[in-house]
Image 1: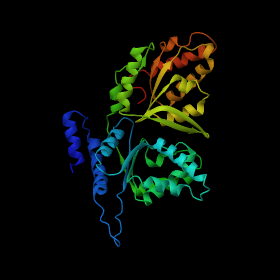
Image 2: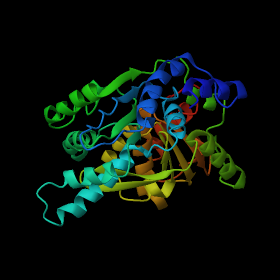
Image 3: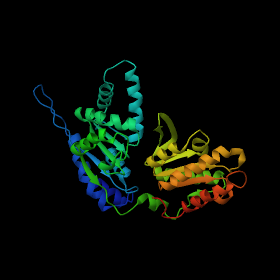
Image 4: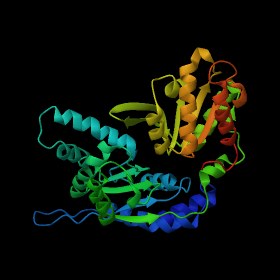
Length: 352
């Protein structure tokens, strides 16, 4: 079996990826897990199954190549049953499965759900683990404990060190055993690359496309393909007991239409959770705003404020330049700040 380092170096020589010492430094951890999972298990009546290898918690700043390394690792696992999934998407599946099991009046819904997951994979690769929802926080510890007990190896990326997960969250003391579990069962490795590859890809590139036409749509599609790096899934956020679905999400990049975020009855709490979850928002088809769509305009202002405060990178297509989006009706004066923020968010180096 060809070593991951050799594959990495070959791809770098071919120009498929850009070599990075910080990325190379973490490859032994991936190789350790890959070797253990690829080793045939000798079975026997009196033979105890070997302990699974410790997982990996890879954290660091955005754009450092964590998701790329995750894809690289999973792509070279051979026949090992594995699943690569965004953490939020996985937790949404878990909540749906728990809901179904609870209909049977089972005394413990987590155990059968975890057993079902463990029966299908030996490795779970989560992208962008973060906990913002109390319902996730209250079940993730027992869920991971059950998965690990069943021999599932967990590898995850995150923008946060484990000690900062669910920081400031409600009833966080009940969440602390999960952090201890991560530190016991997973190697915690910080990816300290000085290079922000996502920012480099956006550096000097246009991020505000106007007017809305076939050219701007094609440009948005090209940026999406470059940043997302593959097929996307919807992102479902849980906010105060409600579900908010974003049509497309991958590698920290979300894409939605103006109507998806501003045409529905969403508010500050929804936009704050969105801003905490993503690193880049691609927003299509921002129309001109006026008294005829005043409610949508108000939501758009609130959305931009949330993105701005969280330093989320915005890439969008719009019917007009920022200063020309809102020309008449109540709220035109207040929109001047939004237009200014839209201009600032276009500047190279902003956000990421």
